[in-house]
Structures are given as structure tokens and as C-alpha cells.
Amino acid sequence: MGKEPRFHGEVSEKSHIIMSHIRDKDTSIEKILRKALWSNGYRYRKNYANLPGKPDIALTKYKIAIFCDSEFFHGKDWEVMKPRLQKGKNPDYWIPKIERNMERDLQKDKELLFLGWTVIHFWGKDITKKTDECIKVIEETIFDLQMENTDNGLFD
Image (tube, rainbow, N blue to C red; front, side):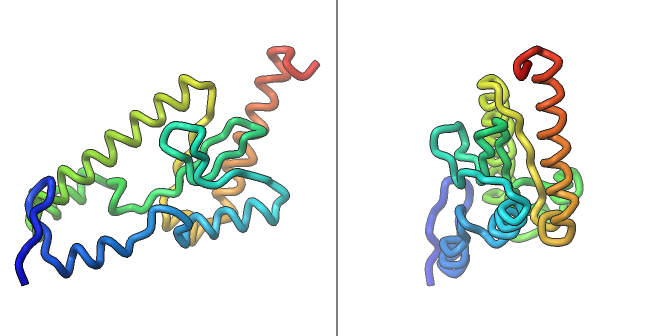
């Protein structure tokens, strides 16, 4: 089988098929967090297209945008992962791809903050292994926002 040219480097047909099956919506980590939010009484929009970056979960009532990030594609521990990728298969493809993802994440966060939204990112493993802690972070953020709005006289 031949290789299919890509934006950076080349990817084998097998890799292309595998990558085409990776979901960008309704991933298992998103479903876990959404289920936990729902069971705690929080209502949300999923993949909210009215906002930059289409947050995986948007708590519109509180203006909180939540992103469920996979460790690999969003560059968790990049200073450790990048040298490993440089030694691995197809670094000319993966390193620029992940760096573009990281830059895009920062840009969409800036845009959301400018619009007055609070942005939260969770790593996939934290969602799957520490779901309760993720919910606690969200609840503490809601509490902080409510206190801030009370201090500013918005709920008087």
C-alpha cells in the first residue's frame, strides 16, 4: 500500500484509516462528564456552536465552557512527549499537528475569555479516574462566579 501525503509529512493508509475513526464529538470522556453533570442537576449544551471552539460542554447559565481533552492530541506533558515523538514514527507529521492543536486551544480560550466566559479544560484520564473531582472543580467555579456576581451587585 502506498502512502497518502498529508499537510506535514506522510501518513500510511493504515494510520489514515485508524485516525479517521477517532471521534471529535461524543467521545467516551465527554459522555462520562456529561452524565455526571446531568446526575448532579446541571443542564448544558453539548458542542455549543455559538461559541468559538464549540466547547464540548457549555453551561450557558453560568457562562462556563468545558473542554474534554485527550492527552495525546492536546499535548499533555509536552516537554516529555515531544522528545519521544521526535524519536518515533513520523515526527514531521505529529509534532506540528499537536503544536497546532495546542495553539488553537490557547486561541479559542482567549476568544472565550474575551466574550466573558470561564474556560475549564479536563484531561481524559482525570475525567475517567477522578470524575467526582472534575465535578467539584466545576461546582467551585460556579460558586466563585456567583460570589463574584454578588459582590458586583448583579444578584442584589
